Length: 114
Image (cartoon, rainbow, N blue to C red):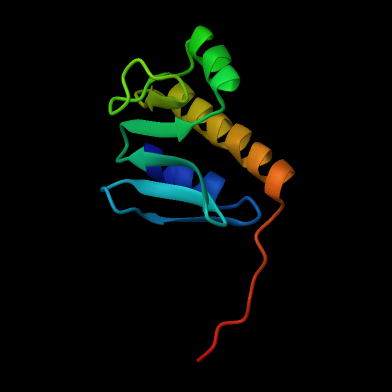
């Protein structure tokens, strides 16, 4: 199974998570309207974290600067090269997922009009 498939299978199993293509070529994972992270193929994952959380993850070597925002804490990137990287990408998305759900709850489902 490819890295992106494994990550997608795991993350979309969490309550309230939806996934799909974004507007910039990424494959995004969202809880309601809030993105918890996105993938660029099988090679990179990007995240947004509160600055203190970002600093801790950066100091632990789990993320690096986002290539679009070099030197700017808050936006993180993680290369995906090994199974351990896949596991950590899932863990990083879970960290964001838990933050979003704790703060905003699960998205409500509304009936669609036909």
